[in-house]
Length: 183
Image 1 (cartoon, helix red, strand yellow):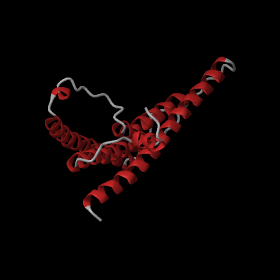
Image 2: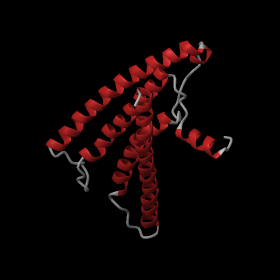
Image 3: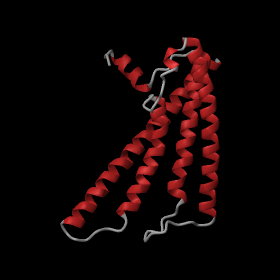
């Protein structure tokens, strides 16, 4: 098995994990919408507001956001400013992208390790939310670690694809091409 085959296997496995995280993020956003609708109904029609909806919906959105980082990066659905990069020669742009991937990897590695320290501290010291729910804080905080870990995997994937000069088609592009459809 060549290095290229290993990278392609890594890409397939990471793609499945990233898509699963995206589905979970979508489910959390749907859950948020549903519990907010519930809150509106019970508050307006039954004059009985809840005390838990704001906290739970905040945690769900936070977790969904961090779980969605990797799929946004994989699909190039994130914000990019390429005013200058678009004017560069293809090889120069490729080298610039590889350098940016290395810097991004290092920054998110620091973010992930610091987030892991936060999660560990919250778990060890039994930190709870300052609300009526008294929710363990390490649970929503762990989304920072998991999302960063998946994003690191996607940054490494992109770097390896650039290094091996493999085409960087997103998952959706592969499915569309295999079905013979035009985007």
